Image (cartoon, rainbow over the protein chains, first blue to last red):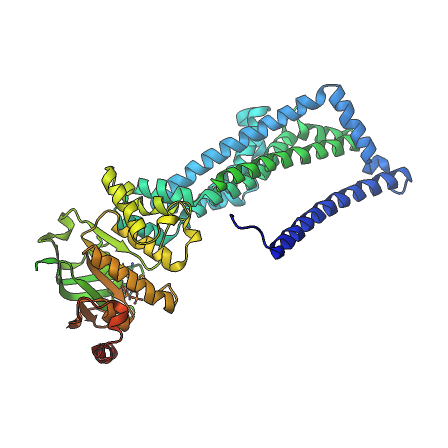
Amino acid sequence: MPNPLSKERKSYLKKQKYNKIFITVAQFLILTILIGLWELFARLNIIDSFLMSSPSQISKTIISLFKSGELGKHIFTTLYETLLGFFIATALGTIIALMLWWSDFLRKVLEPYIVVLNSLPKIALGPIIIVWFGAGTKSIVFMAVLITIIVTIITMLNGFLSTDSGKILLMRSLGASKVQILLKLVLPSSLETFISSLKINVGMAWIGSIMGEYLVSKQGIGYLIVYGGQVFRLDLVMASTVILCALASLMYLGVSLLEKLLIKK
Amino acid sequence: MDDILKFKNVSLIYQTSVGETEALKNLSFTVKKSEFISIIGPSGCGKTTVLSLIAGLIKQSSGEIIYKGKNLSETDKNIGYMLQRDELFPWRNIERNVTLPLEIKKIKDKSARERAISLVEKYGLGEFLKHRPSSLSGGMRQRASLIRTLSFNPDLLLLDEPFSALDSQTRLKVSDDVFKIIRSENKTAILVTHDISEAISMSDRIIVLTKRPAQVFKEHTLLFDASLTPISRRERPEFSKLFDVIWKELCNA
Ligand SMILES: Nc1ncnc2c1ncn2[C@@H]1O[C@H](COP(=O)(O)OP(=O)(O)OP(=O)(O)O)[C@@H](O)[C@H]1O
Ligand SMILES: [Mg+2]
């Protein structure tokens, strides 16, 4: 903007900025107070620190995990499974959605199958998956893919199908082929759906990989949580959960960054 | 003048799972080269259907459509269709929106591209070439949409209530603009509208259709001085007379 900002505009922008800072401060404050109270109650024995653990215990556990070199291994394992599941499911799901968009026949035939698969609790398939893929990484990745892919297909297909009918008519009146309609209209107009699908998939892939680790695993964050529960080491369970939170947030942040990059251009 | 388009007893019946709808029945009319025709008729009578047929989006159930002396389906039709909403793609800037038809039709030569860009400049959108459609007003967007329709130099323009999404003030201005652009590019145009004044102010000839299934009810050849713009036509005494006539016809159609 070439002309200088008016006084009103400046004070408006200032207010906006302060508002934003205020919200961030409040968010941190809530976290700090919660952690502080938790620690305080644990120290004063108001809550049972054996059952509830405490922030200091949790951080001690994380540090000792880190020092023993265990932490990296567990994080790497789970991250690998999650990312692999995430990428396979997103890519495959989008391709399947494209095929269903392309062929009305295929879509109508497969619709009931997708509905059933969507409502089926995937964990019920755990034992079958283990028998098929063995008690290892493969099963866990498969679980992550299975949980993520159905939602991807449904979200992306709805996105493709909701392409503005007026714009499709315009393309058809120009004599556009189906491939041209796909490449020049349907895909670009589904970009936002794709981003929101990515955001959903981050959560889904984590659910899948942790669930997979609950069923079969010798390492990983999910394994730590199950193990901690079995030997009544609640600090270990809590510490793993905290790490999980951090990892999932990081991945979500990555997708948000990608969103900024894609939508701006 | 020679005929560019001829409808001979064209009928169209839509088939759907619920039943069939007879939209056109033995519809016959002709359009001459460089003529500006308006089609007016009761709502739902089949006006859009007529344009969809000409654009080749659907096929008639019976009858013949002759375009430039040949059967429409056999010709390499060069027809531009301007829709009710501008349908500019929000992720493309004006330049890339306007040249979309060239991309689709794989017209690669540079002069076509330059021609399209020069139309943008000629009709007052030059400074918005690199802007997204969202930064244009409704009237400017509709002009951009017309330029997109003209970009591949079509022989025939189809306009389906292109101004109905605009407020009445902008509507007058934009229809004036569009009229001038179409005249100065010397194009044949078929305009579908609900608006009697719009039809009278813009066309050389008005075709009034009957209720569905549409047939030609009346035709009016307009004899305004060629130098009159749509807005100045509205001030002529013939204007309101013709308005009354068509108004009554539409009530009886
Ligand atoms: N694709 C379709 N399938 C079935 N029926 C249709 C289809 N398109 C239009 N019709 C029906 O055909 C008739 C004519 O429709 P058309 O859209 O041509 O009318 P119109 O004169 O353009 O209407 P409006 O004034 O509302 O724009 C209507 O009764 C409509 O319901
Ligand atoms: Mg219509």
